[in-house]
Image 1 (cartoon, rainbow, N blue to C red):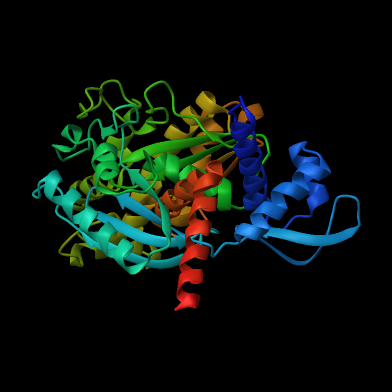
Image 2 (spheres, rainbow, N blue to C red):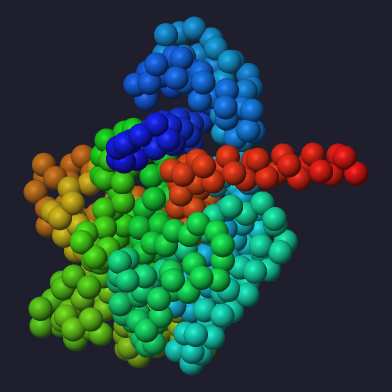
Length: 418
């Protein structure tokens, strides 16, 4: 979105991308409003839109009220022109899913893997095989988005470390997938993917709006994705937002990252379950004692059933998460912090405890206007974020869409001549 055109072709691509990004965020727009929002002339917008209508990339439909109050013919992206593939790699599973360009889910596959016992190379092969299955099934997949646990070294295309498992730091996942599949691929830290999904599809944000959003991913690991003015903030090596490895106790236990007392050691779903098991020994009356296996999800279930011990454990972890949020507020000064993934199962009990700590540990001028909430996205925010990344890749490079549209038209012409 910040590229500068240096010749006619690049400027044309930039202008096309700008129009597609506007339509992606605003939905259905008039030509006049697009000219106003982009700064392009009405004649330029009309020419771009006409080219895209001919290619089947955008469609006309209905009438919309523009900023001037006049009703005009609406223009929107042809959300069913092609599909994108989303891949989510987690510590105990991986997902592959097909999405339409508007973020609607078509099909999803979830595979549980024992990542601590199975070679990363075998898991990556399984992921590639699942991708191949989708590509064989859907011929109109045009891009792939991949979300991986962090810290993710974006320049090197690999995960630096993955808590409780080893070997992934030896794989260049991006390079491996790029060599295997002849499609544009975009790969991001899972928290960045989640944040991008919130920005593109969430409640409060739209294209062109200014502001900072933080998605706090609380799963088997902990991380934060930051979107500032519509752009993912990555840092020099792509590991900005690794708040899971931010120390909240300098005398705490040592983490695999080398730091001590990391937030992740207190607030991840795995750490939470471990602490609950330890504390449970002193609470024989808790209904959790009926469970053969204690996970974050089972604790949340017993909390909802009224188990006092489970409720107090959720409040405790909520306070640790609140301490992390207070640090995030001082680091990024966002308008909104959105919790996502496994630990959102703690609901208002966890969130209220976190907010209480935020109020205690930040000055009122900082926390009074910030909104802290759970995600409301209709699908898994990381997977949806991977789809959004792939879609954004196409919108930023409209030549891919024109090329696909031309191939599709040629194929239908050939079929019609038979």
